[in-house]
Amino acid sequence: MSLALALVLATSVSPPASLVLHGECIYPPRLAKALPDATQVLCDTVEVSAQGADFAQDQWAAHARFFGTWRGDILTVTAMQPRNERKIEAKGHCRIDHANGRISLISCSAFGGGRGWVANFRNAQ
Image (cartoon, rainbow, N blue to C red; front, side):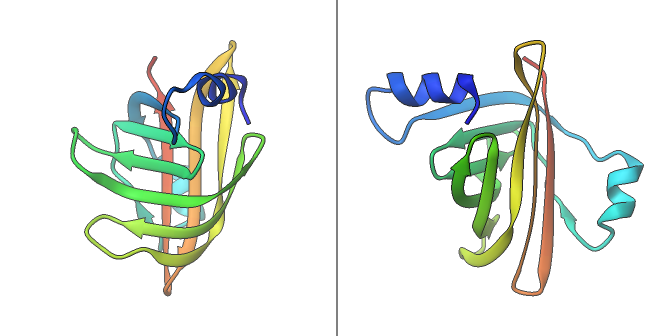
């Protein structure tokens, strides 16, 4: 778990604790080529919590939710909820990357129900 998330979780008044970041989801050509059949999640906000990561666009409800268990900066995804759909069993991972002492990127990929999703969030803060 990242130091920033650990501090948020440790100092939260009411569970579940979370960390909200603002930025954008970006998909470089190399990533799009690597996962051509995966749905690219649109987002400008991500909320990281003990339950997983929720990616949203323009203050709307989450476009994609990745559920699972964190071990350090890696989330092992066990379920996925695409926007306006029910939660489904899925397998995958999310990873938090750091640069200059802050969260710089949160990337997730998961597959379930015969479909795949990818989220690649760059933090602007």
